[in-house]
Image (cartoon, rainbow, N blue to C red; front, top):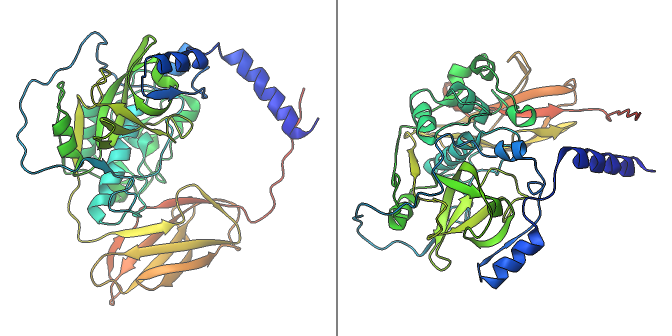
Length: 411
């Protein structure tokens, strides 16, 4: 048998030992959805065969709403002007402002993932650059805010932490709890120069708070995505496409996601989840305005502090693997930028490779001399006097300048 065949057989055995039958039979569910003209379809994903404990780890909203509570609008809204009938920050003015999709995996860190996704996208909007390459640390936010993989967290606490303490970049504190399901100490989520690599929001508001008001959420979305909560039922785990409304299955728990837009034609909010691209419409989805799972009934809108400029290293991105050379693309919006300095840092933070280019940089960086391992790369904007105007968020790269060797044995 080939190595691929052996690994496939092993995966089947392990899956059979560690899972149970699907919580919802997808064929039966799709038949029910069709009979009820529900407007959405289901599919079988990696989530469909999880144990109860594994399912729980995909949530993490500590203050979950009771499934018996129906939220109603209890205050009038006062807006002037007409809102567009559709808004999607993945295609706003022909540009995608939404930061890359992530997967929280085996830890109840949904609040951190929803909050970081919103903050990253809001920072892109504030910079005026949809390609602004900013990756913030869900690990640092989650663990330093007093949260836990087992018990989760609360969106208001996350927002307050982002305002008062802030969060470091992903390269400073990579996300590991999704693989282990274990908490780590806050101190372990801070690199040596964390104080210089911390980002904050300037404030936040709650357009809705335990009441339904679609127009209030739509108004808030004009400024950017918002964090929201949802009561998850079994059928939501198998959502594939269309406009979701809860149809069947038991209540599983509270979850935090973000709303990145809306569509009046569908009468639906456009959501971003943290379960990877296998779920829903490539990791995204649409939820009906009238659905009773609570989407949009609690929302948090972040404000980003003003800045005189940004330095964005659009390439390489976090977790890039490279050999021989790495393509560097960077730009500065600081007035008076004369040149950009590219630095590759080793695990001690020492610069082991430097290269300069013009105010806009798009050129290869020779990394042949670097030993294999993990490095960070950062871009600094300088004026004509060599003074630092600003730096880009650090990106982590992995260098492998030789063919990898692997040895596998089975017993």
